[in-house]
Image (cartoon, rainbow, N blue to C red; front, side, top):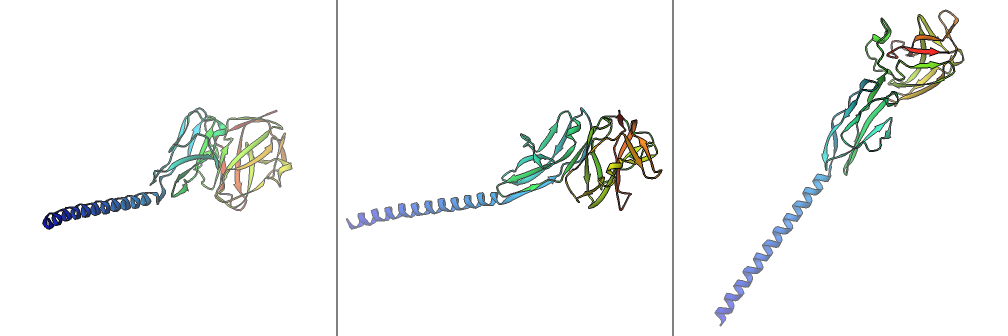
Length: 256
């Protein structure tokens, strides 16, 4: 009887020890699983492909791409001039048929549970498709300090009509806006002071609103010039360093 009891006790002990081992392995597995999950949540997004600035003609399509790594895989939100674009939440932003008012700065906010990062800004420049003015200063290389974003040529403005000029700047300090007609570099006389605009370094697009005047003042010749023309350009120029400048890509027309 004692022998049988001893054998039964030995069998129970075996089952107990097997149960303990299985429980221990389950706990180890759960611990390792939790460690893996915690490790996955700790990897913040890193952008590996930045969106690129582009220049398009009205009606063309454009796409911006941002690629990022992170765990869990990050979500994307595209912005236009710092404002979220509704529904644009994939890694690629596509504009099927660009318009003049699509000219702007675009970037993407990349987010997961571990953090977020903002892509570098990409500038979209939109032109009307008009050719470069022959022998014009717009054939100069791209100046990264200033860029006229819109309007960028081909439009018609009427005297008295407001014009909204969007300019990207990477310089801190004052700049002046000029209208070029033929050999004249012109400034509306009532805006001689107001047109010395101050731009912030690495800022978003600066908006400058002015009315098209019927005449413009040329400081070099000290005379007023009638502003109605079929071919004028807009220029931005730094006060301290005139070599930092940019021109509209195409001619404008000013009508009565």
